[in-house]
Image 1 (spheres, chains in turn blue, purple):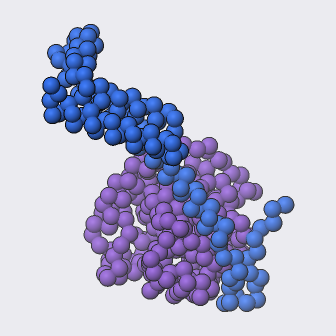
Image 2 (cartoon, chains in turn cyan, red):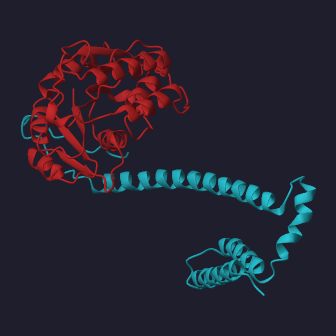
Length: 132
Length: 231
């Protein structure tokens, strides 16, 4: 008999897998991103349907000198999350730079160049420099 | 000497017209870079006679100045003046900033709030500015009393060689450090500062730390050197 947590994990994993597939079909997600999430949701479903799967991690756990599979899962989950946060931070900084460039480019394109100086009437208004 | 004035502005509708009109008495062209104001700063600036460029998102003072410099470099101006849009500086003092450039005594002239009357400067700003000026002096190798002043003039050759990259208040120290590396001459002249109690804005403590960080570690760039004839 399946435990309630296993049903919840399996159902959640299945719902997310369907949603992720839907996002891929609507071309809102890259194929690489889809594979990453599909593997993650599939593992969650697997843990729900076959809880014994969790204990197969024992081999990896023992090889790394950890006491239980739980140590293995939590440690590596945190490490992966740190890596994701680092990558996202880097990506946001890059996008921020690009956004800044675009905003400045638009400002330069739309700059009003018709205003002249009414005070210094005798002098020629500044002209844009010729490109030659 | 043909002069272009650049004013970065954010929500300055109450003061910008006077600044623009005041600057136009001494400059051939005034460029206001509106950093995504929520009020009528761009319209007021344009009516006052300025050329207006608008950021569709708020990027910061440094980015607004960068946009202004790029527009100004596209003109035939030989010198550039930057002035804050909040009424902190008096445009009637622009000639004081331009004189050393005209006399070929300096390539960058800083309107120093510490050489002039600064008794109205809030204490925390006084301490912060002093500290950041010491850091900028150490980083640039040139003694600067007011590294954060936005009231400055530049010879065209300076901006042809160096340009800051910081989008926020860090631009003020960065451009001095880069200019000092390029052997450009920096001079300070006394200017008055008007601090209006109801309009106290500008860099805060968090900005101060960011400026300090960028001062200690400015982005590396090729060190330009200029000859006397290029100045």
